[in-house]
Image (cartoon, rainbow, N blue to C red; front, side):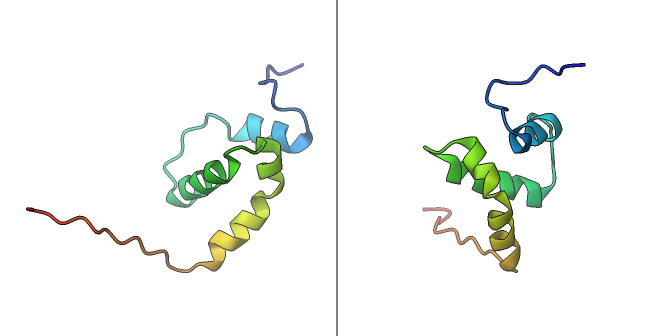
Length: 77
């Protein structure tokens, strides 16, 4: 049985992502952060290239034990 897939899902990595992750809801903070990083890196590049580099991004993210975001917003002013 053939699955209906988006035209961009051409190679095995794309198909795996398309069939198992694309359009699936998640509330997992680690996964959401990973998607945010991947989307940012994708700007101007093919999604296939980003998926090929995904494991490198994961290792980089996992090597950071703490990520601190500081807000410069002042309240009441």
